Amino acid sequence: MKQRIAFTFAMSLVLSTLMSCWVTYLNLGLVPDFLLRWGKAFVLAWPAAASIAFVFGPRIQRWSQKFA
Image (cartoon, rainbow, N blue to C red; front, side, top):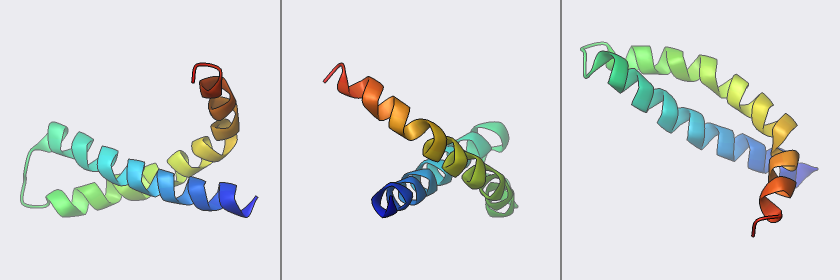
């Protein structure tokens, strides 16, 4: 269980950081307050990403193993 929580924490951190940056950039470009807006998007995205990864991660892992 500790490994699952650590993986969920790390993966959701990386994904929400990169995705919130990318989507903020696509929507706004490099505006003067880009970092502030990115930060706000990240703060909203990370808890959602972590929850989704924790709930659906095991099912998706089992599903993906069928194709490996």
